Amino acid sequence: MSKISLIIKREYTTRVMKKSFIILTFLTPLLFAGMIMVPLWLSSIKDNSKKNIVVIDRTNSYQGVLKNNDTYTFDFVDKPADEVRKENADNESFTALLLITDDLAKNPKAATLYSEEQVNMELKSYVSDLLKNYVEEQKLASHNIPNLKKMVDESHVDINISTVKWGEDGKNKVGSAELALAIGMISAFMIYMFIVIYGAQVMSGVVQEKTSRIVEVIISSVKPFELMMGKIIGIAMVGLTQFFLWVVLTLFISTVAGSFIGGNIDISALQQANTMGMGMNTPLPANETENMVREVYTMLSGFDFAQIVVLFVIYFLGGYLLYASLFAAVGSAVDNETDTQQFSLPLTLPIIFAIYAAIYSAQNPDGPLAFWCSMIPFTSPIVMMVRLPFGVPAWQIIISIVILVFSFIGTTWMAGKIYRTGILMYGKKVTWKELWKWLRY
Image (cartoon, rainbow, N blue to C red):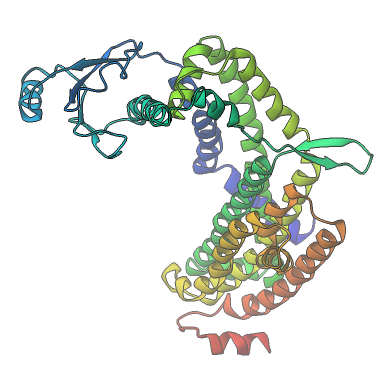
């Protein structure tokens, strides 16, 4: 077995067997699955308690407008607001106070909700919709045009533009710009997270070995370049292992939790909660909800996930190897982790810029910013992942990967020269000028 293979095995096994790795690997999927399933479960729980809303209507015009439902009851009183608030402070008899001081058709800001705690969006939306619909009807009626409201209602049209991709095999595939954006941004953030976390691990590992003088023993048996490459590749395998386990465990836990919770979810309650949160008074019919779910699955089938996953691994490895070699060089040039900040900041700035470029590129994936940032090796692993769900020409992907590979080879060569000199240098504050000299040795 080669020396690099031994170093890779050592780096991989020591990190995978750590308690922190095991705990984080199994805890993170639980958190991911919890983020998906817990809100679904909580939104399905019915709150059977009635919430009483006291209304002070100075105009005496809205008593028939605010209608009770299964959640809210409206109690109209003719008292000063301060007196009502004082009474509630003694016995807490109502949830909120609605004060209407003027004709809302003339003054839309004349309605105010008061409560001891922050008013929730469901209550605010329900009251706003009732008053808004009534005021709109009154304004339409003031024009004295027969059937005006019916004509206005019939004139309202919701345009839902479908997106269809022409496949190379001649078949049409339903697409979704929103899903493409979500898939691209999630992939980009995951690569960003892995590069930052595991690149920092490479730098931290080099610094720890250098400060503990263990590296002096290791260097007596292997070349500095072999040690650097073994460490970088070994930690990359740790990252891929953790990513694979996260995906598998998240899918497994979500499936199990979904089958367990699914039987206990009241669909009508869930629909009511969702539609109330969107400011709608009427829940969606069950068949419409099923159609929405079916549409989502149809749109997901329009993406080439095999290509996205393969290129995700390629860009993850390329981006990680590019930055990890530079982080390793920084770790070899300093004596402690405090001094790494001086040299690591210029390395993290391109990664941060790549995230901002990815956000803007998602709005225009074929624009000049998206194109050039997907070619520049320091930003391409992140920006290209945002562009892929929207479709990228094969020649652009090939050029981007070739540039990334050659850049990795170049940075590894540069980092190797710095690593070779700096790994055995102690007690000296290194400057950028000094690093330039090491590159020319």
